[in-house]
Image (cartoon, rainbow, N blue to C red; front, side, top):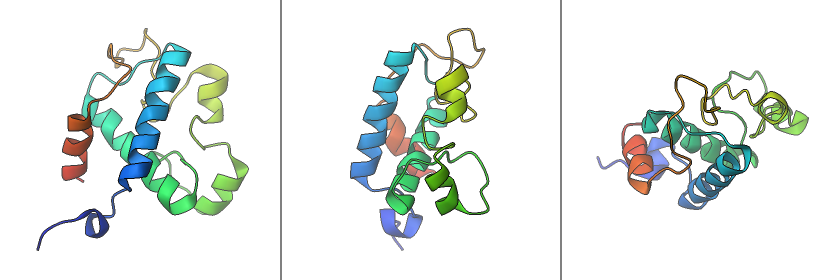
Amino acid sequence: MTLTRENKNLSSEKSLQTIKSFAEKYANKTNTYFCIDPSVTAVVIEGLAKHKDQLGAPLCPCRHYEDKQAEVKATYWNCPCVPMRERKECHCMLFLTPDNDFAGKQQQITQEDLESARANI
């Protein structure tokens, strides 16, 4: 059986590219950086894109929710979440301040890194 986006439950290409573009612009705007391990960044971007497809909003993929739709409506954990906007604290390690030990030097992610992460989901 060949794995496709549908049977692997991956995000659409459109949402993936939208979230990738948003993350790169937001990192630049906030002087934050992606994780030194690009697979972490790629998995978080995929999770945000998947939630955008399923829920209509990029709900933080790194938390557990009893009711995802209610959380989307509350907007607290929609990316960028309130802790990120207010204190530059990103639970997902997507947006890291330069002094964070896990911060890389990149504010961009390659298409290859995204595809590699998707292949391993």
